[in-house]
Length: 170
Image (tube, rainbow, N blue to C red):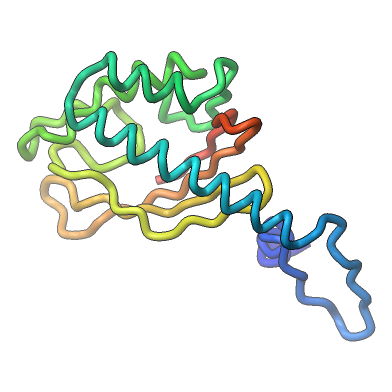
C-alpha cells in the first residue's frame, strides 16, 4: 500500500484504485465517524488551550492539573523527545518557559514546541480527526539565529474522552 493510500484510509477516504478494482464501502457509518472525529478534535483543542494557558503562568501545579484532567493515568508517550508516561509529560512541560527572552530557553533538549527563547507559543495550522485519532500540524516561531519557523506534526489517540497515546515529530 502506498503512503498516500495509507493516509487516505486513515482519513476514511477511498484510496486511488487501479482500473477495474472495486473498493469496499466503509464499515462504519460515515456520519458517526465524522461526529466522533470532530468531538475528539474539540478535546485536543481544549487540552492545548488549557495547557498553553497554564504554561504561560509557569505554575507547575496548573500544568499538572491540566494534564491530569485530559490525559489517562496510563498515557503512552511514543515521542522520544519526552520522558515516558503522563508523569514524564508533566515533568517536561513544567520545564518549558515560553516567556523567556531570546537565548534563555528552559525547554528540555529534543522536545517539540518553539525553540528555546522563541518567545511564543506554536501556531496551530490544521487539525484532522478520524474516530479516536486526532492529528495536527503547528508552526513554531524561528529560534535564535534563524529566520525560518519549524513545523511539528502530532497525533493523539483518544479513548473515553482522555488522551491515551501521543506521537510527534518536529
